[in-house]
Every structure is written in structure tokens, then in C-alpha cells.
Image (cartoon, rainbow, N blue to C red; front, side, top):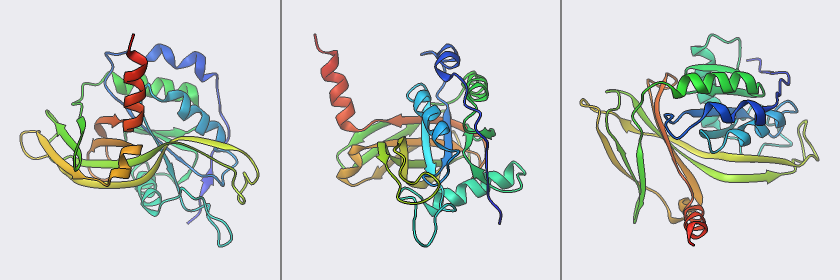
Length: 245
């Protein structure tokens, strides 16, 4: 299989993006397939950080940039398989980096800020159910009402942010920064008839230091109908402290 990279198309995201979001917009899932080893990826990583927290973002590091001598420490085989599924669905010759996928509906060069703004605006206008997430003693409680019957429910654990200086790959020696770095992704079930999904997902205590991202999706790589993010508990505590008079 041949993998390819996208050329840089970074635009002034700080100017283009804020106007398309608002409190009344439905949550949108923005996935970025990237790698520490890809020299075309840093502009897309920066764009994803600009989108956060206006949308639900997830940085997914693929494995095909890894070599016998060096590997992206965030790369996951499950992410590579997920992107391959998108490549087949979108009839691409091969997966590539950086690739951005908005709500499972459209894919494009992950550095293209103008396209990102346009596609996110379109996606956020569509009415969707919004998952409600809450920490409970044993893990995370998921509650989704009005979801599409038969949709798969996914959960990802992501590091809130991360910095690195790769020792190999095309970015060797560069300082890189990422947000919402996927460390685990899994299916938790399917939406039953009636569209109401309730599930307690048991998680270790250390997961409270990560973002929990939940979404519903048609099939393994279909349209994403709903998404939500639960921030790390220390972030919640910091936000509550900042709100005190």
C-alpha cells in the first residue's frame, strides 16, 4: 500500500474560524490523522489547536510513518485501521497525512483552514443528539437521547495536550505540540431501537487526567451524528476556581 502526504495549505485560521461558531451550534467532531514523522503535518496540528475548543477535536497518529529505528510515540494501529476505512469509503487511492475528517462526512487536506471553516459550519447546522457525559466513581456515564437506531457508539481517551521533539522522521529535532492526542479508541455499543443509549464505561482513575470523547457513527466509518467531550477533571476544577468572585 502506498501512503501519501498533503501539501501545506495553511490559511489565516484566526480570522476565518471564530465567525462560524456559537453556543447554539451542534457539536462537531473533527478528526486529524497526523504523525510526528510527517513534515507536512505541523501546520495541520496548529490548525487543530485553533479549532479547539470550538469543536470536539481528536488528533489521531497513524503508524505508517514508523520505522524499525524510530516510531511516533503516539501512533496507534487502531487509528491506522480507522483511517484506512475512511480511505475506502471516500474512494481515495491511499490514506495520507495530514488528513482532516469532519463528522465522518467529508475529508480534505488537514492544513486547509478555509475548507475546515466551511465544512464545520455546514456540519454544525445539522440537528443532532448531544451525548451527556459525567464522571462517576467507576468511570464515565454516557447518556444519549434521540440518537439514530443502529449507530455505533465510540469512546476515545485523549491526552489533553502533548509536546515532543522526535528523534527520527522528517521532523527530527523540531519541537512539536499537539492537542487531544488519541491514546485509546473503542466501540462501546450500538444505539438500540428508540434512540436512547445509556452505558457506564468503567475506566481507571488515571483516565480522569485525559479527555473523554464520545460520538455516534453510522457503521465503522460513516456519518457522525453526535459528539461530546468531557474534559480532564483537573481542568474542570481549574475552570470552577476561575469562576469564583
